[in-house]
Image (cartoon, rainbow, N blue to C red; front, side, top):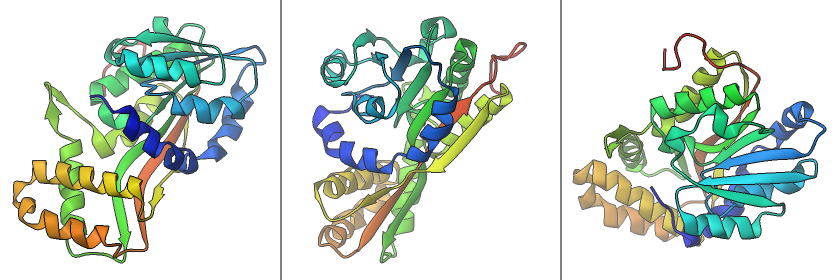
Length: 265
């Protein structure tokens, strides 16, 4: 799955505002005094690095992972720290790939993975002996104020679409944060979690998010197509005061790889 640089740029301010900065206090407490080596998984254009690098001790070196070489180039040019890039599929990531890491990060990543991939990611992070900070995982909650009778139908269909099978992989979608927590806890890690919702108003980010959200819901539940145009018109006319799109941030500290079974239990 790939995302356009324009979409990633449009959402960057909302992402930065939503991320749970209070998780940085327990993170800083376990970071080494030595220069930091930070692996950013699924880095996109580098928004996580632009947000996080100024908030952590210096000096730092970032290792950026993404399948899209064009996004990697954009990210490496904009991270406020020395950076190197690795174009690879995260599904095969191992502890050896993260050797020497001080921290592993990822943003809007976990919900795009399968249960097996999340479990392997927890194995890799704990095997590398470093904390992991994953921000902005969707939790399946969208709340408009005021409400519309179709809100629940579109939300349910969108969540089911997020859990779809694609390319032979069943994505976790809104179940990802819980699955990741269980995977890290099973390996003895302490997991801190905080809510990190987007709060959207009637702007371009909301308009693009709404169109994509409705389209995905209709792909899963085609009978909603008959209602989609009127529903979007009502929302795009500004018949709401706020929209809260639920996310959660996770910080996993400690733990060790599973000694007998690296798969989900």
